[in-house]
Length: 562
Ligand code: C2E
Ligand code: CA
Ligand code: CA
Image 1 (cartoon, protein in one colour):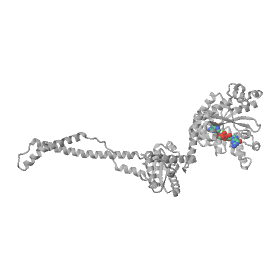
Image 2 (cartoon, protein in one colour):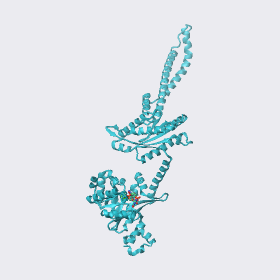
Image 3 (spheres, protein in one colour):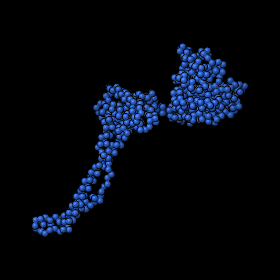
Image 4 (cartoon, helix red, strand yellow):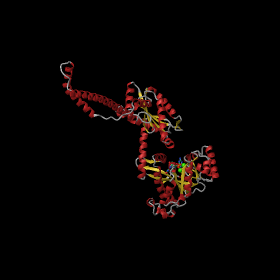
């Protein structure tokens, strides 16, 4: 097949006008055979009579027999004619079946090969290239955010974009290469190349990325689309790969490289490397581990102290998730939260953690607040605040003690929706903080229009406070901005007494960080609170923690437990 498969389809379209239904006329065939037998019988009698009559040796042949013979000849001619048209019709059927087979081998929308037909074609290409001392690069292409193009503009325009993309790919690819649409917005190409000139493939793929990214005018709108690309060379093929395995293996490896390109930020290409395969396997393990871990209760809340820097008093805790995986050990949220978001498990995970945290925090002194982190994915759920209230009611935890932290990056999403969400949470008595401030470039105008209760300065600024004058100026600016907006400030990531001192001089802040200790599990927090007289004994009785504390002999620290 040529590099421009759409031409191939056109050729098919012209050659065959389409199949007609065929009726096999067996009756006609039967009559023709009967007529032939009769012709032999009657002809055997009448013909010699006729010959003799013409020679003048005998009288006219029998009229009835002669007429029967003529009728016979007419029927035979009719039968012959029918036989000829039958043959033509059979030929047409054969051709249309052949066309149907070929049509099943091409993708109806783009005219390229499809997932089924690329397999033998790729195997054959690798074989023929190999015999000329060449390798084949299998290139897997996945359009970035194509779902959005479909959702925003409808499927007709989506189809048009796919067609134009296929045309553009076909235009750039050399004539001896293959192009297939594997389904949806996924394409595969195969290009023979010389081992020493792999950079030619790099150039070609860069050109493909560039051409596909040009604006597409479709259905009166202009669409721009990028693509993520994975490339694998046929020299990665297992020597023992059978002909049927070749394409599966090539496409699988190119897919792994493509997935890597997606992870690295899309709109780019990567050559396959074995490390990517291990990474992907690990990632799959994490995904299934997360799903199982939620059910088996492997996700647990840890708590980080939050302190009033002026008085040094403990004012509350921030809940930070931990995964105590049976298979993989202790895993931090930076690893599993993004995956849980991607696989759609974050809401379930979060509910599970919050439920535990509300139970844990119930026995704390009622002056202590509980802060929870909420993912941008959860904020997209219009029912989020209702669900949260329901959970609070179920666990009998007062909304006034709860603080929801949303990261600055959320503000780049639908700002109207975020505003509605914040307002709705605040109406229920829940406080809302802006987390990781300084990392997300939110504007002053945005901040003014969003009714946050608190701003948390990102730990990256706080960490650099000691060495770097710029950081201290930045923090100063944030503090005075907070004053102007009447939003109190928390400084995250206080690691040393020096940084604490510097911050204390800068204003009236709350703070948290390893200087006050690492995040701790519920039992450790309860022990800490018991020793500070900040446990609510009346609620402790009903709590599972009573046993843990008794085991640790801390119940008897009696006097200090409230
Ligand atoms: P975050 O909200 O900024 O949480 C603070 C992170 O800073 C925590 O990391 C904490 O252990 C760490 N940290 C605290 N003090 C210090 C310090 O003095 N120095 C340094 N270098 N780090 C400090 P962790 O627990 O690994 O959490 C990472 C992030 O994961 C959190 O950042 C938060 O955005 C997210 N996260 C944690 N739990 C949840 C959760 O339940 N749901 C969601 N959506 N996100 C969560
Ligand atoms: Ca936080
Ligand atoms: Ca933070």
